[in-house]
Length: 106
Image (cartoon, rainbow, N blue to C red):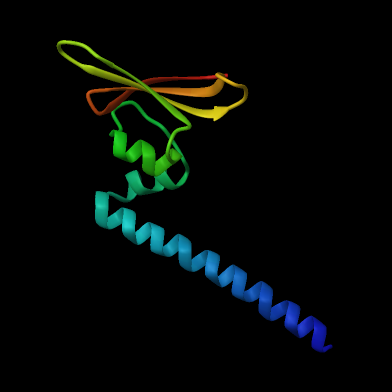
């Protein structure tokens, strides 16, 4: 019986810590963006047109690689995620002047 009590305590602690971390992340994102629908989308790891580069990083994390091109009127960055080969990525998200304009997924 003592063993199962110990297992219960450990599992409860892990679950409690997970819930606390999610709540802390929610609060931090709400303080940053102030919009519950944006925070929910970020926590679901969604990507949408018009989201800022900062929201993209909050949603998907730091990319494995970034390609940048600077033109006269705009700066284009391609954020690369889900590396599946030496120079192959399953997800590429294009950001122009700080806002997502499109993405490709394989």
